[in-house]
Every structure is written in structure tokens, then in C-alpha cells.
Image (tube, rainbow, N blue to C red):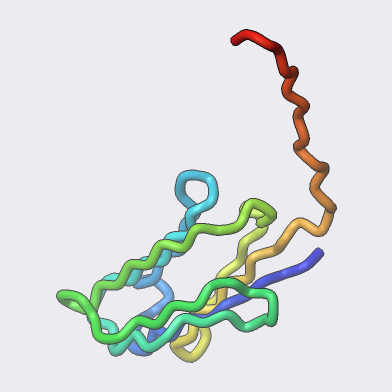
Length: 112
């Protein structure tokens, strides 16, 4: 199984201030509410990660929200998150089984 992981800095936030959810089947939503400090950056950790976003400053009261559309090959039910020393690490397992080709032949006629 392949894994992708990425990190976000949440200095000043506690674990209880941060929420990580998957919505609409493949949208990863990261939210933080409260009195947190500066939200610094979000970046891929592994070489095959495709997400690169930078956040500067904060909203009212230190609130933060970010939505990331995940690729189809992610095992959503196995996503894990951890906060340590103000850094949120999210591990996103990738399905290693090759996808079968979705080729569908279309019959061609002389009239529609």
C-alpha cells in the first residue's frame, strides 16, 4: 500500500480545536477554531504528493478552513491524522491495485 502524507502548522491550537473530515466522498476538510496562532504552511511530505498550498495570516478569531479534493485512488476509510508540537500530519493511504481500463465501445450507426 502506498501512502501520501502532508503537514500543516497549527501553532497555538490544541487537538480539540482542529477538525479533519472527509465530505462528499472525496473532499478532505481541515478546520481550526479558536485562539490559535499563525497558520503557516501546508505542504506535501512525500515525492508523489500533489497538494501544495500556502496559508498566511488568519481569519477572525484565528479560524481556519481548507478543502482539498482527494484523488480517486485514496482509501478514505483509512486516513489518519495526528497533532504533535503544533504540526498536524495527515496520512492518506493510496490504493495500490491497478485500475481496470474503463473502455466502452460505442456502436456506430448511419442514423441517430
